[in-house]
Amino acid sequence: MTKNKILSVTVVAFLFSFSSAFAQSKPWPVPKDALLIKNPYAIDEGAVKSGKLLYVKYCVTCHGEKGKGNGIAAAALNPKPADHTSAALQAEPDGSLFYKVTNGRTPMPQFKTTLTDAQRWTLISYIRTLAAKPR
Image (cartoon, rainbow, N blue to C red; front, top):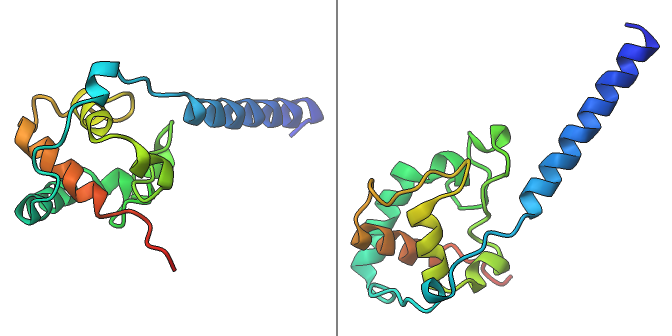
């Protein structure tokens, strides 16, 4: 390989990694009215169990079994899947998470027609159980 080709490959790789990092840092705006919506299933143990079943079926491939954003499909995604155990995600209001699950954003699919409102809320209830535990 010539020096020019090596340089070209290096530049392309750098630009790709830079754009990848930039894409991950882009904010995901949520309408203000969505932030105020409360989860009607927030403290329901049955909802958490139902949410876990949905999580395994729809979310694990990208977000991973423990919700860390490291599922088997995560490496190929840009931006990378959210870490559901992170303090930042756990600090988001339920309405924000519901909005994101409902509407999606590339590469995350929208679930507005795949899951009912109740199913999406139970999914949020389960995601809340994934918060990082203090050591």
